[in-house]
Image (cartoon, rainbow, N blue to C red):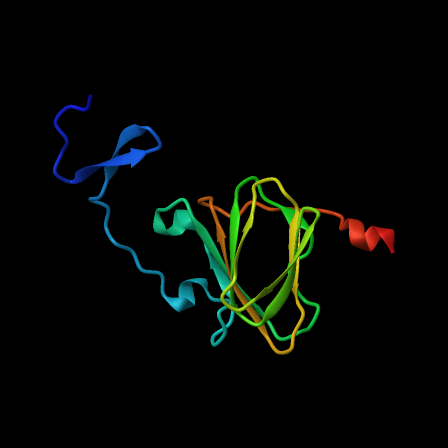
Length: 146
């Protein structure tokens, strides 16, 4: 049982437990110049720790057919949002064709990659369920088999 809760706190259900969660934090803004690696494209990243949250967001875009993040793994879940274009995702041993509007899950500790299959550009927003971007690059078994 929780005792008196300060007015700037709220009770939050998390699974079967009730926890206290501060809501008195100050809002923050990161301007495009703070995170973008390109002045006109949605390309760059926002580390969760920079805005006081446990979610890191990456913005990826490419016009090059075949380009994309290489085989790698994270110790946390990653959610991929295809904003524009068409991609082929490999998540573990599954190959998934995705198009604008599709949302995919890359489970924690499951190697994955994706690339632009065209036509045109590919834009994704990749949500890392972690306050910072942690990635281990791996040898791609498909490339090693060639």
